[in-house]
Length: 155
Figure 1 (spheres, rainbow, N blue to C red):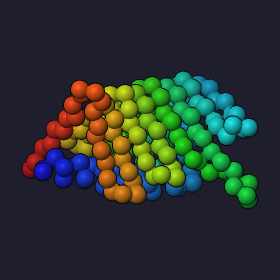
Figure 2: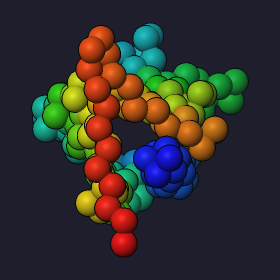
Figure 3: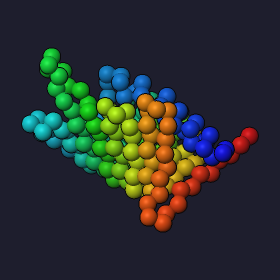
Figure 4: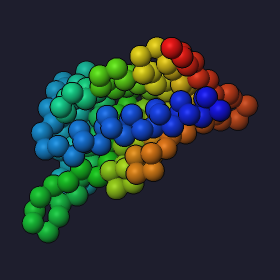
């Protein structure tokens, strides 16, 4: 029961951590290379990618930023995929994964490829971690015969 409560708390804090940051207007991304594929609506950043949006920081090997253009000609991010040694930090939160996918319309973040999420010393890990921001809910999933793990410290 304490683990379920901890997982709910993780989802809530990740919601507080990421949603305001994702809707703010400025993002700064640096990388070794950037390619824009206008007809496909994607910008690809490769090589030592580092993104900052407010106090949210993301490091990875490659980042794909998918966007749509509305009727006023304004571009809006629809999906972001970070690949290769993904690290996400914000305050006391830290996440590691091989792949992270953010779906803006669904307000969902999916961490795959050995994901781990820490808050201070507390840790959850599994094969897939899914955060549903609209629902204040998160899941830690195992594939096949795998297991999930939570290390929780109580004061």
